[in-house]
Image (tube, rainbow, N blue to C red; front, top):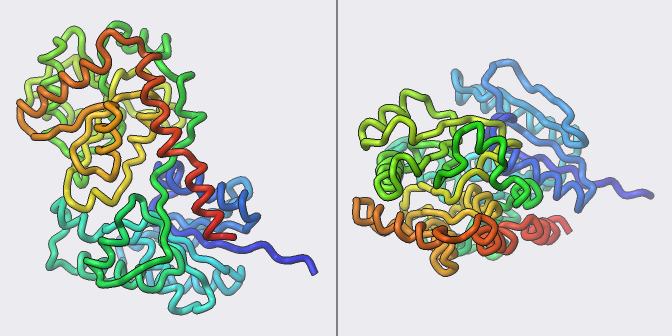
Length: 397
């Protein structure tokens, strides 16, 4: 009798349009489907109160469920009941949530469906991180609930996929749980999309008057886990060092113009220095390619040792030196050991000035191609999708 392919339910807490689904979930789902031939169902969130919506994405099924923001607990009770029925109806063999908030749903589903195997992907200390960046308080219900579920996830999962090495020690010390069923997979990227073919696009350079400029790129947000004033203070130091006629900050973000203007005024940055754009992710490589170096302004709180910013992989793939705080995953050490950027050792004028000068020594007198050839191999070694293929082939043998 012909065997039936596995059926895997992937769970996220993000909207389908969110870049974390498009770049951090679906590529891995595609890899798993290719390796296993499994039927793949991907849960994403929408902000309406209409119930489950299903749509086909090529050969992957996307299931959109209401976020329950207005009726949070009632909404998620409904969703969990609906997912239980889906598991039974579709004969789901594996539940595969992304990150620990979605992992909480996975744990509940496993408790109700004991034959289901559970894999928590990108297992990071999310609850503790939210306290460290002052979004939550340690006495708050959200922190206590997620911390409790993170402990259950560590204990009950069949497989844990860490974003950075050393997470097993954190779990043992923080949750008092010993784990052996784990692997490490950083945030990998598409090395074909992010490549030299997108570097220094002449039409875009001409369009935004960046032909003869030294350009620093940042593709991301501010607040939460990301530095705000410190980022703009660094940009102000770049402007002073290279001159307002020579330096530009390319900000690829949907942050408001009012926010950017307020920060620019506060830090004495000239009006024309910041070029703010928001483009679809598929166009990011050619815009990022206009830069000469990039910045990764993740707050250097203790738990960031266990995360892996996806942007660093994209920056490296584009051959960009990176400015980064210390102790961000293993990325800070990789950058320092390979002279592929600089570490901001202190968030003051001395620290910023030192970082700017270090970047200048890396790019000054060198062609864009020379810098690319030096840094691109980091992406090929540390962010290659082949890493994910090896991890998933072990989990779904």
